[in-house]
Image (cartoon, rainbow, N blue to C red):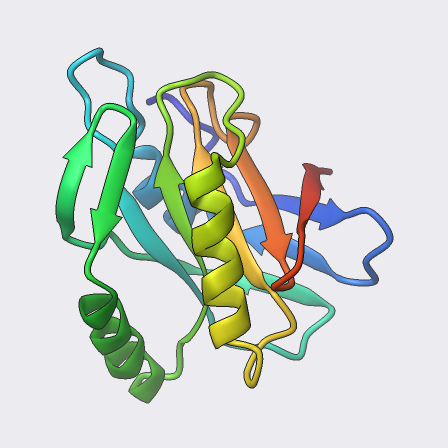
Length: 161
Protein backbone atom coordinates (compact mmCIF):
# COMPACT_ATOMS: atom_id res chain seq x y z
CA UNK A 1 0.00 0.00 0.00
CA UNK A 2 1.42 3.42 -0.84
CA UNK A 3 1.68 5.52 2.26
CA UNK A 4 3.17 8.62 3.71
CA UNK A 5 6.75 8.02 4.89
CA UNK A 6 6.39 10.61 7.64
CA UNK A 7 5.13 10.53 11.20
CA UNK A 8 1.41 11.21 11.66
CA UNK A 9 -0.33 12.71 14.68
CA UNK A 10 -3.94 12.37 15.78
CA UNK A 11 -6.01 13.57 18.72
CA UNK A 12 -9.19 12.52 20.44
CA UNK A 13 -11.54 15.47 20.72
CA UNK A 14 -11.27 17.04 24.16
CA UNK A 15 -8.10 15.13 25.09
CA UNK A 16 -5.13 17.10 26.42
CA UNK A 17 -2.72 14.63 24.81
CA UNK A 18 -1.87 13.64 21.26
CA UNK A 19 -0.86 10.38 19.66
CA UNK A 20 1.95 10.20 17.10
CA UNK A 21 2.63 7.18 14.94
CA UNK A 22 6.26 7.10 13.80
CA UNK A 23 6.89 6.39 10.12
CA UNK A 24 8.41 2.96 10.87
CA UNK A 25 5.30 1.84 12.76
CA UNK A 26 3.05 3.12 9.96
CA UNK A 27 5.14 1.23 7.40
CA UNK A 28 4.87 -2.00 9.41
CA UNK A 29 1.09 -1.67 9.66
CA UNK A 30 0.67 -0.44 6.07
CA UNK A 31 2.50 -3.45 4.66
CA UNK A 32 -0.53 -5.56 5.63
CA UNK A 33 -3.28 -3.58 3.88
CA UNK A 34 -5.91 -5.77 2.26
CA UNK A 35 -5.59 -4.45 -1.27
CA UNK A 36 -6.46 -7.75 -2.98
CA UNK A 37 -9.77 -9.62 -2.85
CA UNK A 38 -7.81 -12.68 -1.67
CA UNK A 39 -6.11 -10.76 1.17
CA UNK A 40 -6.71 -11.95 4.71
CA UNK A 41 -6.92 -9.72 7.76
CA UNK A 42 -3.78 -9.16 9.83
CA UNK A 43 -3.42 -8.15 13.47
CA UNK A 44 -0.71 -6.81 15.75
CA UNK A 45 0.13 -4.68 18.76
CA UNK A 46 1.18 -1.05 19.25
CA UNK A 47 4.04 -0.01 21.53
CA UNK A 48 5.50 3.17 23.01
CA UNK A 49 8.33 3.88 25.43
CA UNK A 50 6.74 6.63 27.57
CA UNK A 51 3.18 6.43 28.91
CA UNK A 52 3.36 9.76 30.72
CA UNK A 53 4.14 12.22 27.92
CA UNK A 54 1.63 14.70 26.53
CA UNK A 55 2.32 13.12 23.16
CA UNK A 56 2.19 9.32 23.19
CA UNK A 57 4.55 8.13 20.45
CA UNK A 58 3.88 4.79 18.80
CA UNK A 59 7.36 3.81 17.70
CA UNK A 60 6.88 0.08 17.31
CA UNK A 61 4.15 -2.04 15.76
CA UNK A 62 4.28 -5.82 15.68
CA UNK A 63 2.43 -8.47 13.72
CA UNK A 64 0.88 -11.31 15.69
CA UNK A 65 0.57 -14.82 14.28
CA UNK A 66 -3.00 -15.50 13.21
CA UNK A 67 -4.91 -18.47 14.60
CA UNK A 68 -7.59 -17.91 11.98
CA UNK A 69 -7.86 -15.33 9.24
CA UNK A 70 -10.32 -14.64 6.49
CA UNK A 71 -11.13 -11.71 4.25
CA UNK A 72 -13.30 -10.18 6.99
CA UNK A 73 -12.07 -11.73 10.23
CA UNK A 74 -8.93 -12.45 12.19
CA UNK A 75 -8.16 -14.16 15.48
CA UNK A 76 -4.95 -14.29 17.48
CA UNK A 77 -3.83 -16.25 20.52
CA UNK A 78 -3.97 -13.97 23.61
CA UNK A 79 -1.21 -16.02 25.27
CA UNK A 80 1.15 -15.31 22.37
CA UNK A 81 0.25 -11.61 22.60
CA UNK A 82 0.95 -11.62 26.35
CA UNK A 83 4.34 -13.29 25.84
CA UNK A 84 5.23 -10.64 23.26
CA UNK A 85 4.20 -7.87 25.68
CA UNK A 86 6.27 -9.37 28.51
CA UNK A 87 9.35 -9.74 26.29
CA UNK A 88 9.12 -6.21 24.91
CA UNK A 89 8.36 -4.74 28.35
CA UNK A 90 11.76 -6.02 29.49
CA UNK A 91 13.21 -3.99 26.60
CA UNK A 92 11.40 -0.83 27.71
CA UNK A 93 8.29 -1.02 25.52
CA UNK A 94 4.70 -0.55 26.76
CA UNK A 95 1.87 -2.14 24.81
CA UNK A 96 -0.84 0.49 24.40
CA UNK A 97 -3.10 -1.11 21.85
CA UNK A 98 -3.99 -3.36 18.98
CA UNK A 99 -4.23 -2.84 15.25
CA UNK A 100 -5.78 -4.95 12.52
CA UNK A 101 -6.94 -4.63 8.94
CA UNK A 102 -10.33 -4.35 7.27
CA UNK A 103 -11.04 -4.72 3.54
CA UNK A 104 -12.85 -1.36 3.31
CA UNK A 105 -11.89 2.24 2.61
CA UNK A 106 -13.39 3.73 5.77
CA UNK A 107 -12.87 1.10 8.48
CA UNK A 108 -15.05 1.13 11.57
CA UNK A 109 -15.05 -1.31 14.49
CA UNK A 110 -17.39 -4.27 14.08
CA UNK A 111 -19.41 -5.64 16.99
CA UNK A 112 -16.69 -8.25 17.50
CA UNK A 113 -14.06 -5.48 17.50
CA UNK A 114 -16.05 -3.54 20.11
CA UNK A 115 -16.21 -6.54 22.43
CA UNK A 116 -12.50 -7.31 21.98
CA UNK A 117 -11.48 -3.68 22.61
CA UNK A 118 -13.66 -3.39 25.71
CA UNK A 119 -12.33 -6.67 27.14
CA UNK A 120 -8.70 -5.68 26.56
CA UNK A 121 -9.26 -2.15 27.91
CA UNK A 122 -10.82 -3.50 31.11
CA UNK A 123 -7.96 -6.01 31.49
CA UNK A 124 -5.39 -3.21 31.17
CA UNK A 125 -7.11 -0.79 33.58
CA UNK A 126 -4.38 -1.14 36.23
CA UNK A 127 -1.78 0.10 33.71
CA UNK A 128 -3.68 2.25 31.19
CA UNK A 129 -6.64 4.63 31.15
CA UNK A 130 -7.64 3.22 27.79
CA UNK A 131 -6.55 0.95 24.99
CA UNK A 132 -5.71 2.18 21.49
CA UNK A 133 -7.51 0.37 18.73
CA UNK A 134 -6.44 1.05 15.14
CA UNK A 135 -7.95 -0.37 11.96
CA UNK A 136 -6.18 -0.11 8.63
CA UNK A 137 -8.45 0.16 5.62
CA UNK A 138 -7.62 0.27 1.93
CA UNK A 139 -6.89 3.99 1.62
CA UNK A 140 -3.47 5.58 1.93
CA UNK A 141 -2.03 6.09 5.43
CA UNK A 142 -2.72 8.08 7.53
CA UNK A 143 -6.27 8.66 6.18
CA UNK A 144 -6.76 4.92 5.78
CA UNK A 145 -5.83 4.22 9.41
CA UNK A 146 -8.76 4.79 11.76
CA UNK A 147 -7.75 5.18 15.40
CA UNK A 148 -9.83 4.96 18.57
CA UNK A 149 -9.22 4.75 22.28
CA UNK A 150 -11.47 2.45 24.31
CA UNK A 151 -11.84 3.11 28.05
CA UNK A 152 -13.63 -0.14 28.85
CA UNK A 153 -17.02 1.46 28.31
CA UNK A 154 -16.92 3.20 24.93
CA UNK A 155 -14.81 4.09 21.91
CA UNK A 156 -13.40 7.59 21.52
CA UNK A 157 -12.56 8.44 17.90
CA UNK A 158 -9.28 10.16 17.00
CA UNK A 159 -8.81 12.59 14.11
CA UNK A 160 -5.61 13.17 12.16
CA UNK A 161 -4.05 16.61 12.56
